[in-house]
Image (cartoon, rainbow, N blue to C red; front, side):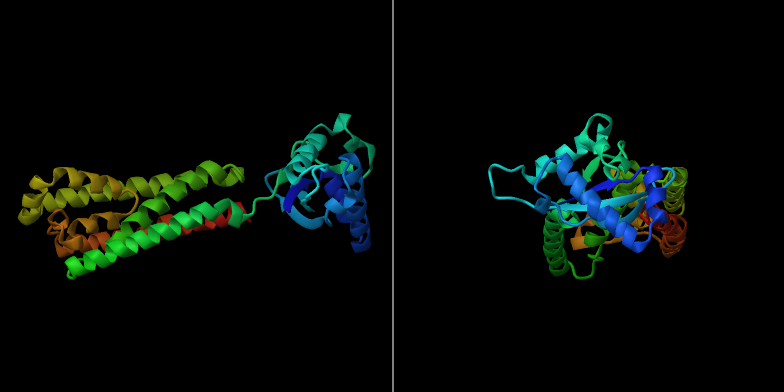
Length: 291
């Protein structure tokens, strides 16, 4: 079984909203019958239509309906994929298809068509498997690092990938969903780009200050220019990246930068403030886009 979604037209939405509860039930029941005739398919393959959500990406917002489609074992009947494809074509070209023959189906939005409703578990099961595998691998690395050098801040084994993943997911969210709510597209970019630039500039300033005022750090820097430069760039995602340089994770000398307490204080408060000017607004925007 799969679930498909389709939209009422602007006029159809207004008409549906004016109906009584019984009137809405009658409309949805008749719509199911008319859709079965339009395909055509055995009506028992179409479950009862679910209502109501609103699609705010359409202006004005329009009602979205959900239709569960039952699978079949008969080789002589259309499978679920074919029914979804047929309905999509029928609705998108309703001017020349049976969709325009009935009063109910004629209220369906052609530009929306009929779309398979994404099941989060099905769509993201491989992602979830990947996450579980990643956590297991990181867990083994953490245990190894802890045994090898217990004094190190080995928790950075988890912190580093989480910071990178959070930054990538933020960019992907803007690319994939930013334009769903046009008025939030620019704020989404602003609250991603500006904090990143601020973090990077602060990271550069912090590194330059340490090079200038901390001779022990300067000696370390001369021998590790590449790794220091890399983490300065990565500090654009989160200033906490700089603390990894002094973490002594797994006793690796490369991550033995002698950062001063003053600089660690700046990194902490910079990250704390960054949470409120970056993560909090971004979370609010993502909630607004989704709902």
